[in-house]
Length: 213
Ligand SMILES: *Cc1c(COP(=O)(O)O)cnc(C)c1O
Image (cartoon, rainbow, N blue to C red; front, side, top):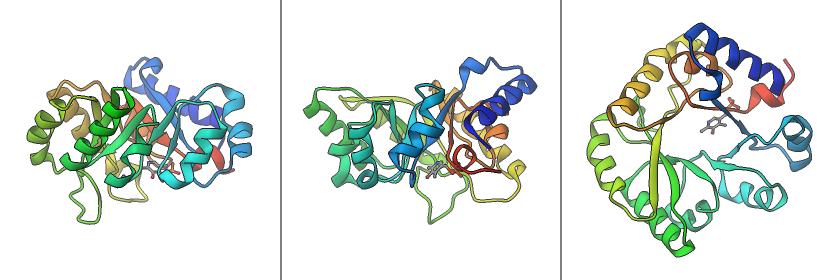
């Protein structure tokens, strides 16, 4: 596809769901793509938020490109001081990680915006809180100075069929409502349209932007 094609599909999904397209932001996932390609395929269309999933790969890109950077991948506690350079961290998956990020945010004199990752598919190899852990974790993390918890994020189990993720996206939207969190980060290249229909406010799309059909 291309970035304009992805935007058009987001808009169509909004129409089907009776949603205002301004309520959905496209986060372009730029991992494995060099700065020149990001400029050519993304930033020529406007100042889109950019997502990276590995600190080491991301840091030189943050230096090179002025953008609203989001961190979307698994984060180790010893990298918290780098993570607070990002505008939004989507992947807070433990209380200890939240505490480490909060400490580094306070040291940097900022309030770090974060999302909590939820492992809705209950996959042992995946990161994120289990649903039943979320209420207590949220209460503790919301009490930390230096963090602002703005929403939830999920990565559903891999499937060829985008419809397989629909119930989990609906579940994430329901949980976000229950805990009065405005942001729902869900949907990737294979299933972003379903995610938008189910209430995504942030979709994280890489391949569909960078790869020709
Ligand atoms: C890579 C990645 C994406 C984007 O995946 P695509 O299939 O390339 O759209 C989204 N979210 C996370 C957490 C990722 O690591």
